[in-house]
Image 1 (cartoon, rainbow, N blue to C red):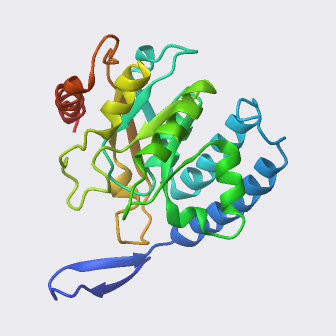
Image 2 (cartoon, rainbow, N blue to C red; image 1 turned 90 degrees about the horizontal axis):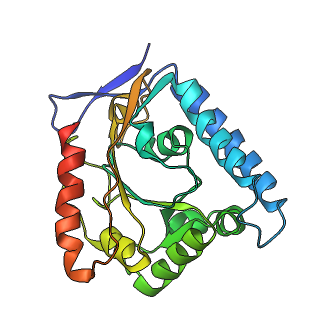
Length: 247
């Protein structure tokens, strides 16, 4: 059962909610509050703490399970335990970070918009975990670089969505080169990942939640050793082509 209304164009029918909407958002809210409390309980300065990874994965699953997501991960053999990567992925839905956190066998940190750091209680927890703040209106490349450096130094991989925002139509938008410059600067491989199905579960701009299969396809890592910044465009195109093959 779902409530529907006509869109502004008058011809498209858009769902506002489904029976899974309230359980998913309620579970996500409770899990977020719990994660904030648990994270702030971890001793300051211990981003390497083994407690942080279960907290993040539990938080991610608290969104995925009530949404009815069946998560399938292909290509796990491309991930080497103990290695660090700059993970790049297409961006289909607000559910993507949860899928990546739950599905990848990696300590994972990611870039988050500044507005999240303004929410009550969020700033301290996000900084304790090592989430990297980004002001989309006025990005500070130096601050981003320092955040990425700290995450990599702590042994985590960094997740970046090179499209910059969720896709409007489900297609693959152009990639920005920032993630690839970061990988070159730190000498870590790029790990391309295709996410499929999150848009069908939770479409951008909608609160209608539908159960479904979500796939993560992990592609072969792309080496950056010995490269300089001029190679960033070529790396970007290679990663984008790999991601496109599975869409």
